[in-house]
Length: 289
Image (cartoon, rainbow, N blue to C red; front, top):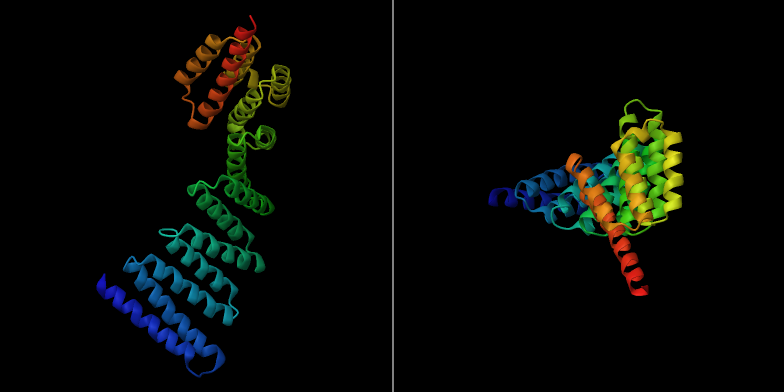
């Protein structure tokens, strides 16, 4: 490790010296770029992530001088992947630069991929609002490039986080849209009932029984096989328990479904909100009697 660190610093020193020397415009930046690349690699081997990241940024600056946009973008990506280990803010900043470059040269699927990576970094930082913004950007760009599966993965993230933030209508529209698109695709068709279940659970959070019943009819029109699924049954039974204000029935229905198809934490969180609303209603009525 010490050897790698010494080697890295030596390469970096030579690169800086090369930049400060007099030389033909292009050649000194090419030579410096080669040395910065070697320095960054050695910093990586020494697990000195911040130094590796900042050296890749210097490499990117050399490529900017050489007007090599693709190499510039790649150097920013390499910088970001080093910074990811120590400094999410710097990693995001480098990925943003890379995305701008990839957009400039028309590499939109690469731009989409790194928008998604920025979203995931915000996600890991628990900055949900910013994660939503970048998952939306990634989804739009993936759609432009007709990479439907990746677009839908990003959209699902947006919908899930929107629901967590109680933006239920936004989440419902996204889940229903994905379900509609998936019906015409043999590979995605099997996921339709899951998307409709997610949309339905978001509707349950609004505890409007009439709206839920109408939605279930629409889902049946959209996909005639849906009413034969356990997902449909769960939504219909929960709607009935809300209508009857019956917490016992609600609990039994959810427990039975969970024993056959375990509910993930997102669904569990939302269904607990529905249960809390039911409880609050019950307490309200008890106070009135």
